[in-house]
Length: 65
Image 1 (cartoon, rainbow, N blue to C red):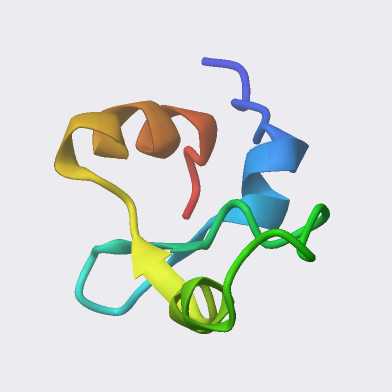
Image 2: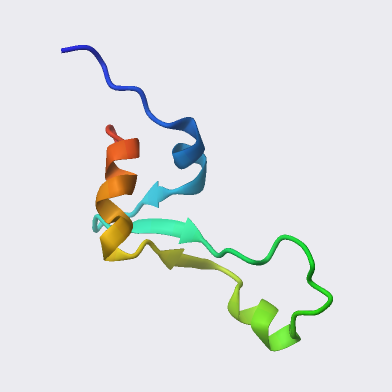
């Protein structure tokens, strides 16, 4: 079997935690921030977990993670 290539864009966006869950950063925090409330921006801080329905897709993109 040939080696599988990792999707580099996915490798930069996702990290696998020790328990097996996949960590991702929050969306909607990059630009057009003036119309967003301070509370909204505060809640977009930090990281979140990938939804279970998307987990298999991310795992396929990161074969050696």
